[in-house]
Length: 599
Image (cartoon, one colour):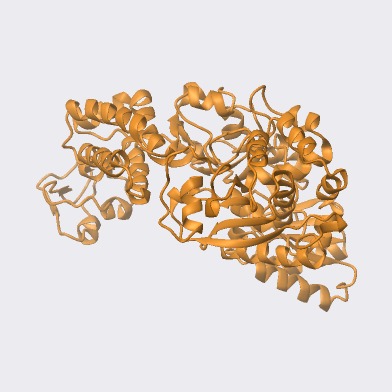
C-alpha cells in the first residue's frame, strides 16, 4: 500500500510535510512501516481541497487533510479497511461523498499529458520516473540516431509553444538544426511571471525528469550539447527538485558524456532570474542569462540563428517540453488526435479567482470556457453570477457570458479579443469592477516594463493614469476615447510581445463592458461598488436602532446621531458625514442589523 501526499508549494504551505512526518510516525507505532510506503509527490491539481492524501491501490482520495487526521486514517482505513468519510470529497450537487478522483467533476474532463506524473511519483526519485516510461523516449531517439526523423515526429504532432506565442515546436527545432555552429544551446524557459500562474512551477516540482529528458532529446535534434534552464529564484522548491533530478540523471548516465553509449554528449545547468516579467520574452531571457539587462531586441536575427552567446539557441517553455517524451513514446498520431485542427493536444491552466474549484487543470484543446468554469471549476463561489474570465494573464483579455461556449484554442481566443498566454485563467463574478481589474493589470505591466521602447514605457503609464482618473470619479468621455486610441497605438508600435499585448485588457473591457466605463464617467458610480472614491456607505434610518456601535468603530469619527427616531425604536438613528468618510467599511462590518449599505 502507498500513501501519496501532495508535496507541491501550495500544500507544503498547508503543513503537508508535517503530514508526511505524522504518517511515518503513526505507521511505525503500529509496525506498518514495511507494509505502507509514504510518498511525497508533486501537485495533484485540486488546490482548493489541499492538502491531499491518496491511498493506493484502492484509489481513495482524501481532501483538506491536517496533521491531526493522520492517526484516524491509519487506524480506520489502513488497519480496519474503513474509509474516513468526513475527509472524502463532498460533491456539492449530489451531496454525496466521492472517494475516487476519477468520479469528481474536477477531473472528469481532464486529460493529463504534461501533468501525467504530477501527484503519482516521488519527483526526487529517478527510478519512479523510469518506472513510468521515463527516459524511454530518449533511448529510442538515440538508438534510431535520426534527428531529422525525430523533428518530423514533433512537426506532425502539431505541438505548439505553450508559453504564449503558439509557434510550432517542430518548426522551431528544424530552424535551429539547420543553423551550423561549433556550439548550440537548448534553453528551457521557466520564468513564469503571470499573476496567479503556477503551471510551469508545478511541473518542475512534480516531474522534473520529464523536462531533463525533453531537453536532451531537443539537444540531440538540433545538435546542441548544452542545456540551460532559466528559472526565477522565487521558486526554491522547483529549483531544489530540478537540481536533484539533474544530479540523478548524471549519476545514471542520462546526462553528461556519451549518453547511453550513443556518443552524444549533453548536460544541463541552471540560470536564475530575478523575477522580471519581461524576461519571459526569449530575447530578454537570453540577455539576462548573459548577465545583461533583461531587455528584448528586434528580430531577426532569431535565437535559432543567433541566441545565447551569439550561438544558435532553441527556447521552449516548461509545458512545451513536458509533452515531448510522451509524443515520442505514444506517436504523433495519438497526440494529434487530441484537440482541434490547428491546436493539438492539451493545455494546462491555473484556474483561479471567484470559482469554487481553484487549481491546476489540464484539458484538451477545444473544450469550452463553460465546461472549464462550471463543470471542472464547479461554478461561481457563493452562488453569485458569472461576469468575466481573464485568459492569458496581463497580456490577455476579459471574456464575457457570450464567450462561454467558445472553444479554447489559440485562434478562437485571439478572435474573441483575448489570447491563450501561458495558461492563467482568472474568473470574476458580479462583484468585480472591470475598470479596476483593468487598472490592476496595467499597474502590473507598468511595473514590469523594461522601459526600452517609448510606447510601452510611456504609453502604458498614460493608460494607467487615465484608468486611475476614471476610478477616482474624474474621468470624461474624451478620456474613454483616448484609452481606445492610445491602446491601438501601443499595440502597433511597441517593441516586444509584452508591450504589444499590454492594452488587451483595456480594449477587451471597453468592448465588453462599455456601460460600466460610462457609469464611472457620467454617473460617477461604480456599479460593482469596488471603486472607493465612487462609493458611499449609507445608513438606513428605518433599520438603524441607534446603538452607536458604528460611531465607535469609525476611525475618523465621521458618524453622528440624527434627530430622527424610527417607529418602534427608542434611539435616534445614526448618519455618516460623506465629506469626511474614508470608505474603510468598518461601520458596515460591525453593524449587526444590516442597516448600512454601499451605494
